[in-house]
Image (cartoon, rainbow, N blue to C red):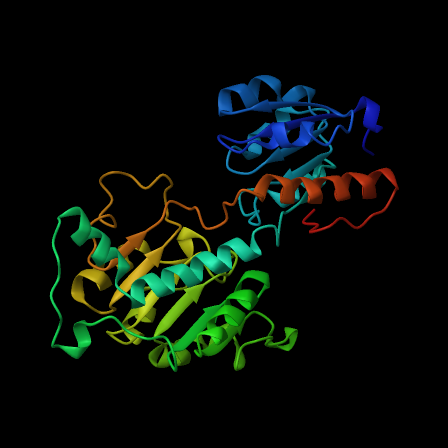
Length: 322
């Protein structure tokens, strides 16, 4: 059980987010502190009853936190947490699923538009003070999205909203989800994950908005990339390891696909010597799809709801994982 509010201590652990500052504005009277790096987290986690964290988490921290009873993930993904270990130690875990559904879906749509309208090339030309002339070759021009086919892999909250946005641009949307019976929402049709190889040849854009699981690790591998049209684009707003990164670099260099909008990579920050930086047609954003000015407050809403449920003795948490 969680201690009462006047006996509770929350640790906010993130390298950049202003979690404690936003929490203080709520005037809850709950004690809290903030850490910005792993060393500080190691030094102070023993005093925390609740940990609000994402990228700074390491599973060995659980052994250093005798008071810890609840972890609120700052992000939607929770693949970094050893769920069995947390359950054995009696530590509850909830994700922030849905907290950035609007932001990530809008970012994915922005990447689709940027690739179709060749905006990275235009920005590069601006930096070089080069005015590109008109193009006679049809294949070399900017394109329209109407009637293009978008395959959305992961038709959950993010993918479902991306489908809505894409329909506003008159795209044909095919959804792929673990359980097709969960509904298709705005998508024109929905299929199981096993159908993806058969769907890829028809796609003009493939957008990844799925969680990282054993079934989705390296889902887009060399074979999947080879099945796509040479004019097609890949957009990854899921997790880096959903895509076989070396295979993607090879496909971009060979012209197997036209380009890729990438918000997540295998290693983050992306190492300076990564071949992905210079891969032809790669447009990279630094895992910023979910960041907005409202992000901290959205996470805190979930946190407070989950604290309230536990104080009321409820078993089920919002976005419960453990």
